[in-house]
Length: 91
Image (cartoon, rainbow, N blue to C red; front, side):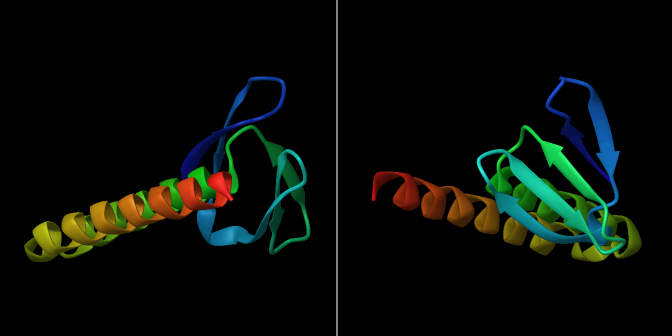
């Protein structure tokens, strides 16, 4: 589960495996596989980053000997996501 924020400021835990789409319009709208829609303050990039970190954590718990490679991959992907976001905001 990832922690997100509703527009009214209340915190919400979302099962990221249920997210089908994340759309910026102008607030981030998450469409779950159930058809339910959630509007959150976090950007699509931030939802993706938190999902990546959550999944890496799950894999580390299930496969402890792979912890170092998974942490490195997660850090690399989060860094790349940040670079992509910076490029999109510039152009």
